[in-house]
Amino acid sequence: MLSERLFDETFGRERQKHKAVLLSPALLVIDLQNFYTQRESRAYLKGIEEVVENSRNLVEGFMSYGLPVASTVHRGGAKMMVQWWGNAVEEGWAVPQFGDLPIFYKDTYDAFHDTGLDAFLKSNNVNQLVICGARTHLCCETTARSAFTRGYATMMVEDALCDKTFDHHICSLKNLANGFSIISKTAEVLKLLEGDFS
Image 1 (spheres, one colour):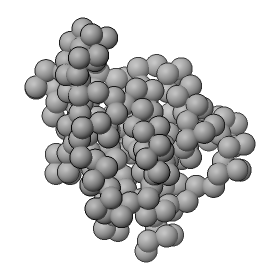
Image 2 (tube, helix red, strand yellow):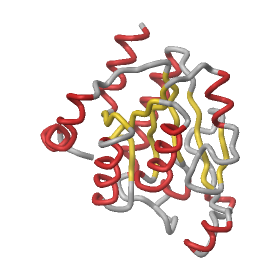
Image 3 (cartoon, helix red, strand yellow):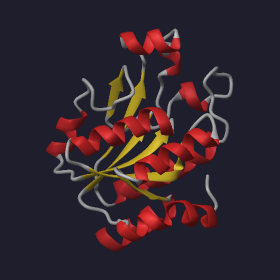
Image 4 (cartoon, rainbow, N blue to C red):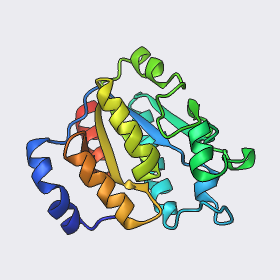
């Protein structure tokens, strides 16, 4: 998570050009599942507890205004995923944190690939995807880019995203801020919800 000062230094210039607004949004919680959240997992992400809490606040905020919310679960069974990582996610590690949401199971980084997510968003008249979850530079970034090419505005919630290292996290968000996504924080998104939808 970035301090306010570092957040402003890193994303201030892009934020002047692209203001944080919500435009018929949906929240997508990417891969907050046992594989990343349980300390005994080989893929546990240090510090993810705060990301889960911020994501929970976002889920509750979106749902309180009747806005669409969905979740993904990463299985990683696609040929290239297994070839790259050497394995897939075992069934016991594919349990989502928020099991009461619509869930899209995916086998690669892109949450749109062979999942039905696009149809879900279109059926809910969504124009913008607000993204939180794990891991910033893999599934979250890939999904944001894929959403952008499909015509969805995207917003990445910096303090509701997690990665293995700070460098992966910040470099990914810098890239996205320069051509694909508005970078925000949980408190700002909740304030926007309150202002736009109450």
